[in-house]
Image (cartoon, rainbow, N blue to C red; front, side, top):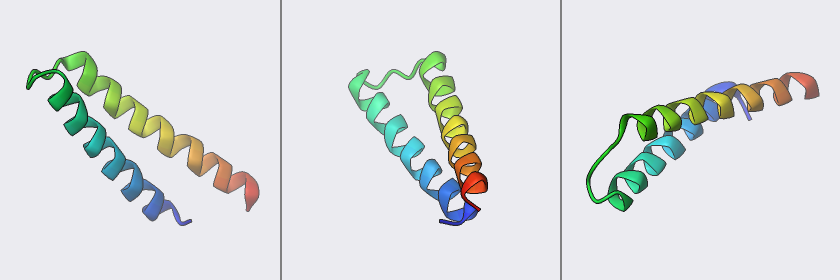
Length: 56
């Protein structure tokens, strides 16, 4: 998979998880939840890109 596609998939997953978190919390979004989703998205991109570089 190319890097742009990985980033796009990570953004889609983070948007879905943000919507799920918003619905599960009864419409209240906490800053810790939002920051956690963003950090998780960036960590996921970082790990996948490193794995791709090792395989290449």
